Image 1 (tube, helix red, strand yellow):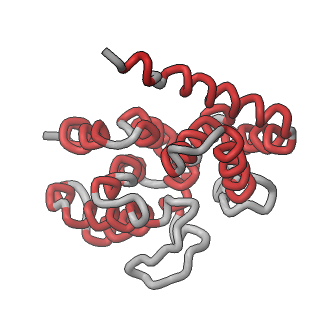
Image 2 (cartoon, rainbow, N blue to C red):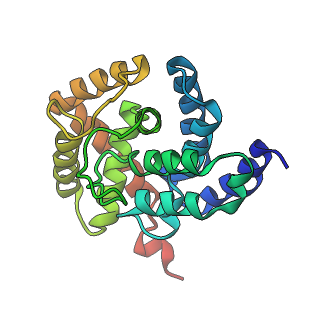
Length: 223
């Protein structure tokens, strides 16, 4: 079995059990962008490929520290030792840990959260920033609705606005370590939407109305 066969047949199917924002299509998109960035920056493409494939596997344990668990899963996978040295695997573990924008690192290094420790961490972090503005807004509303299932539109909108400002606005905690053209352009568009409250509210309302329309009413459930 080749490395690619192992990743495609054993690793990527695990994403099928995750939430909508972290399924196999997300992992595949991060892999594609990681390989592209590795080629552009002269990094080992196979290492970048595997880092991207493992970066969210820790979600099967919990969400809060999934980046740490993902690194542990990578290190525990003895099959990878067919293709990588111990030194390479340690670099890959650190990169997996460093991919998450909102993490307080809490890693095996004990270092505070900050800039990725290696080029590989910067690559997977950059690749993971899939900043499609409409998708970001809708996923933020979806997460707000998950956290506050009884919230009305105004409550969900305010919670979503707070998160978008905290993460994506100028001065927010999300960083682009390699400033890829795709992410820079998309982030500028998203920030313009966040500044335009009428446009942001409309996008959130469209998502909310579509979700409410999908929910069965008590009358439709009665027999």
